[in-house]
Image (cartoon, rainbow over all chains, first blue to last red; front, side, top):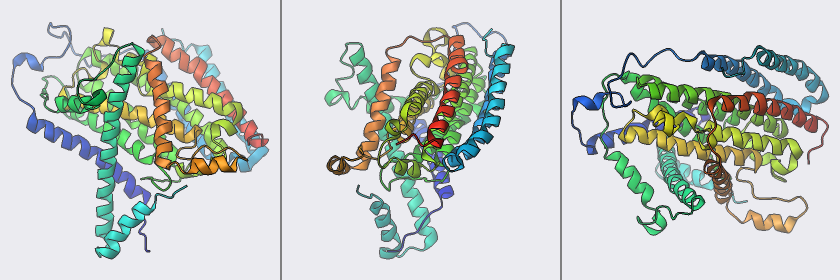
Length: 122
Length: 360
């Protein structure tokens, strides 16, 4: 029996296209089936019943931004940990001591952020 | 354990040998078939979870839940989906039209790609990268972008606050998820999804990994609940303060996509927990009990995987209907001051266990 192997990249792209197709098809069906009516008030923002004041794409609390920066730092460090994690068994104690240095720097970053009060929601 | 890859081999044989298709046509046809299969499973699981959540919620509140449409209300989710399809897609005045339309695509594509990586059964897997679990983490975080775009482009104060809360929550809890996944990768020694399953051939990781595996499982389930914006962590859509959070302005089927993706993400978190801690599709094997292991092998692998995923998601639904909602400051300090330090220490513990060979 001959089997054809399709590369995983192609399959992953197929999955992404399937997602796009699902949204597009469902929107097409919904567009065909759903009623349509126009009303001036319908296009308003869903807030309190009275017209919106000002722009809603406004400035927001800086706290969210701080957490995003912290996330960036720790996520990159997680990405660096992955290749070591795969080989951790074979690298043994040597690998452990090497990664411990990296790990301590990671923890120092967390301690610094904590002491600075970046983890406190104000 | 029956190898289910004979199905894909049979289809491949049908196209190439029986019908005599050239290579490019075979690849195209097989990709289309894969897409259809993914769509079907995706839709069926979403409908199942909509029904399951309502039934479980009803049971916790001493109600009956949906019971009029079909036996035990099983046709209720079909009715719900049909209702969504025939609702009007309202076009709003002040939204950023392109981003508003793009957001549901991102949310659905993220969950569909993560969905394709799950190990459905022995030989039944759509995408098997050698960095499978890493790929899963990467694509499932595209969903955050969809949610942020949905909230921002709607031009509404409720959606903006909901999206920002959701973004802060999802990125924060992603660190804990990544760390507990790294913990299990240290134990398994591979990132390939099938490789992780086969590494649990003799014993599931939750049993063989000692205490670090159990801590990693608890951290994963808590962080996974937060990642799906559910349970006690559902403050992005806290209805008493933000109406419906980031999808307030979406109507009809547009809203339906966020609804579908939420339930599918629930299943994906359950599936990944089953994969990392309960052996994916691997039956329950106890070292030394050969007769028992043989009996367990007779249960099909698909049933094992779905069963484990459903049990874990049941626990997550249980969380939702048991705990009151947290405040945003409690939520973030819980992650950064407790969950993440715990998972860092746990990773060190697991490394010690693996390096000194204390695992089974």
